Image (cartoon, rainbow, N blue to C red; front, side, top):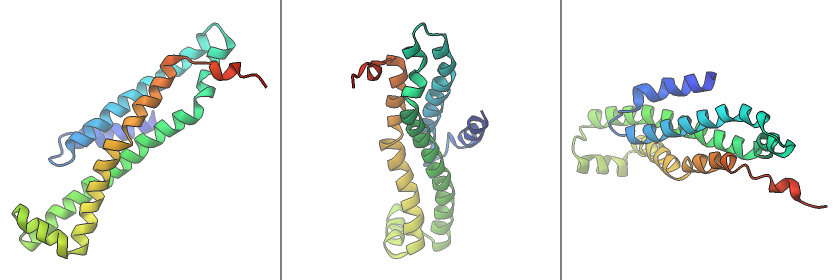
Length: 152
């Protein structure tokens, strides 16, 4: 719950960020998936069979991967929001008001490149890695216990 509050504290003020808002909103959807998954875990203890009761243990590693994708997305976006603010200030300081001037600055200024890359990396991670969290959460919905049926 502590992390969910921390995550919400990041999402709420940044969900309408002019550059990163759509990515923060994707993180918010992942937060909802995480909350739903966590809230479903105690329900497995009410299942009839021992196999079904053990589903959270069976999917412990994928659950940690899901959680990790969400945490790392959060950290990337947090850095990206800060980097974008610094990049905007750098554009203003250098008089790069037009897209063309900003492109020129990105070619010739190492700090601008670094900040741009922070923002770009966050976008890529949220678009390409974060969606895996939903797929992993769906594992729990299958209630697949076939791994317990392996014969040795």
